[in-house]
Image 1 (cartoon, rainbow, N blue to C red):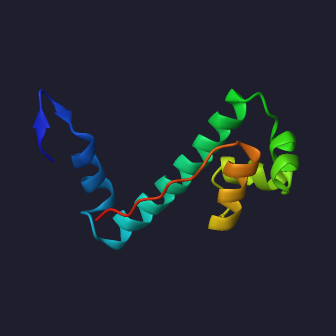
Image 2 (cartoon, rainbow, N blue to C red):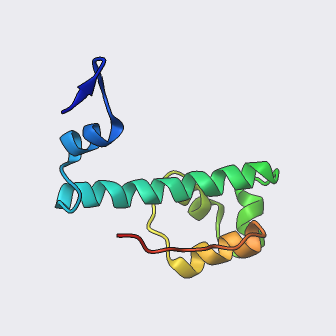
Length: 100
């Protein structure tokens, strides 16, 4: 790991901890991190709008338990369900992009 002033960059830390890009361990970490970010974004938008988990669930036709599991990164989520939560529950649109 390359250190500057006794500090390790985040990128170097990830490589040290999870391996280089493209390795199975690193890919798994990055997938789990993306799922975590989705849960946090939903939770933040929900709170910004003053919605409880139950109110959000009611707006988009799912359950409070399901919203909780998404926010706590404890559930895989179908794209169609994610889009419905964002569109119907939060009044937003989902935009996806593919990167290398």
